[in-house]
Image 1 (cartoon, helix red, strand yellow):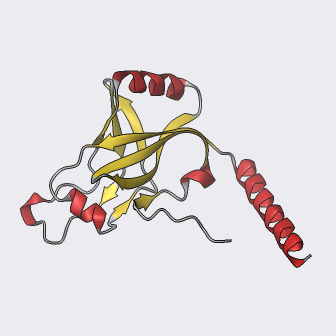
Image 2: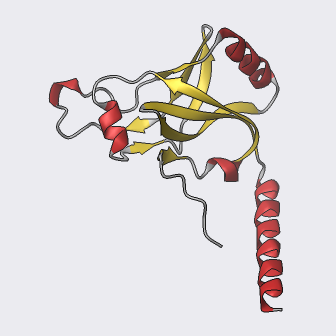
Length: 153
């Protein structure tokens, strides 16, 4: 089975769907400085350990690493700095309500380009326990065996 590829994705968080139950997703803008967009276009981003938090009525993404651009010299910024996400007040209030529930967090799923703008797919997620992860792996394996058995017939 061919994997669905997203040709405009700059970075994806493959670990997120393994570690979390994804409840809801939304598209957000992100505030970038200097040569960060050029670095992103080269694929020099890592969002596997990133998360978002709400501070003073604004949403910030933490732990997202964007490597400095090689030709950027003085215009490069700190690779791990906090970056503001662009959301409406109503969206922020809705996220605040959902995150205030026990065990929920905001996790970026992917960075991608839309009409030249960098966007973040942000998910409201609940952490999985170890037995949930094992259950997911077992279900995936059984589905794979069923598909192979049907293909042989």
